[in-house]
Image (tube, rainbow, N blue to C red; front, side):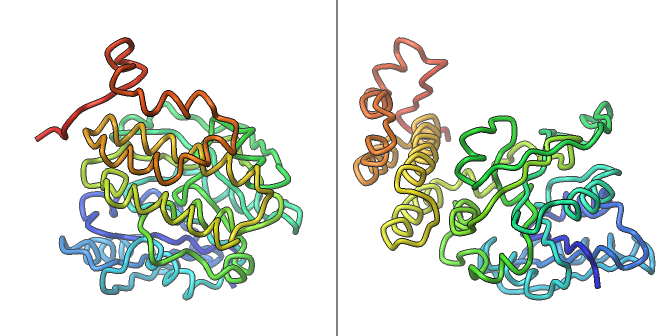
Length: 316
């Protein structure tokens, strides 16, 4: 049985999936499997993935499957349903791993206490593969926090995303995997539903996260609003672990980030909509400076445009 199952959701990434799969130093002994789920791509991504898989050696365990477009959560769930490894490790189809990533992951995940159900991986940003030439391997280091909320508050150098996380398969299955009715914040939603301690693998860098392109889901403003609405609705339903204060602080920070992005992208009406719907989280979290700053973003932009980016309409 494989120790690790690497899950790769794929949608219209024919330009990057070959580099992604080629960066995974997959052993030939079957101890690590890769499962790629093409989520209804229209650019031949699945064919490129199969071609890349064929070049990874006959002993490497890699599977490429296709499904009708259903969103990133559904694609990851479909991959997880086929997985056999004890740990599910996620990577996005435009990101890359380092030559040492699998070796470090196998050792570090195996050494974690059994109560730790989730680990986040140190990452670096890049635009082109050449940007990674100077990234060097370092001695492994990790920290353990009592919960996802504690980790998110204490750690600022690591982002908490589906692109750089490993989750014990039994814990993933116990909470039902990713939500499939939403296309943003589905990763935060999962992390908030998972209880127990969380590990941070802080060194060496294990994931290279590509800087965003215009077709990224993060750039879809409708999904940005939907994601925050989903977190608030789930919180109201009592779906999440943690105290009320912990949940409020985490959702409030996600809310602030999305509102700032919407103001900067030229969608002030959507930013104000989020503020009116969910501004209560700012007060509950004690983030009073944002309670008054957010509504005044257009005025603050005049005074400090670098701190308060704002556009009245989107760029054409």
